[in-house]
Image 1 (cartoon, rainbow, N blue to C red):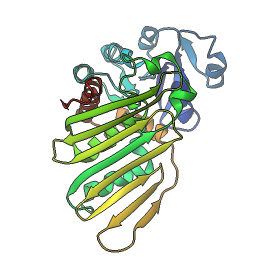
Image 2: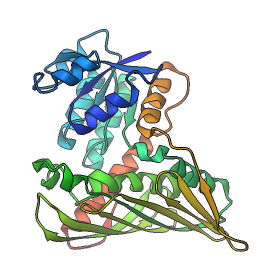
Image 3: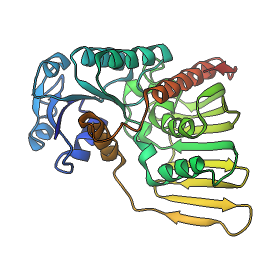
Length: 323
């Protein structure tokens, strides 16, 4: 059983703990790092967490095997570097960092220290997202040509905090909240992004951010793609892969539509799962040597590189930017 420290107990930090605590025989949280222990006292007591007020305190605890970061994006690099220097495995919420150079530093630090690095792009473990990746890799769709994706919700409006509207902390509208999950799955299928063009259209400022981001993508493999995210609409997830011999469309977490050149469209439905727990357990399996972690560090860097290019293009009114 891997014993982990959770750093940050906001809404998503608590989601991470809830996903495995009492539900997993591979990983559990033993320690919480919070600047305000009184605020989270009921939660930490309910889950049996020892609370400390600094990452340094968790890093010097020999009972902590790994650190899970659910902290503001701009803090990720320094926290990954500190955790790697302490010789502990680190799982970082998405985005890993805000720039490619920072992602490369984080990956290098973990590699040089010989510690495992995981990342919280859990939506790739949704059943339908896993199936579209399998179909794309299998060759059943023929030569892959184009990807269309959209992941939108109203979390930013319903749970608004100032960091969600900060161009330094959360750039490119809905990318850090939802869009990066679909970007992760696109790069999983099509490979690294070569060039992007992005636009943000904002109709109302925070705390109810009526804004959209729309992105054109050119992949190094020759495929094309479009990606969109809206920060103020009911939950919607779609990823559509177009190939010469068929297409596969993700419709929400658990449903996929497969279309071939001949025949009726085939609807596939899958049992629901807990993608957050699956990702954390995959991290634990890799840490114990049971299986490799399914997200490579090269892939982590490619996702951040594309995200940075999207951010730059959106800030430059849709100018083409190489990733």
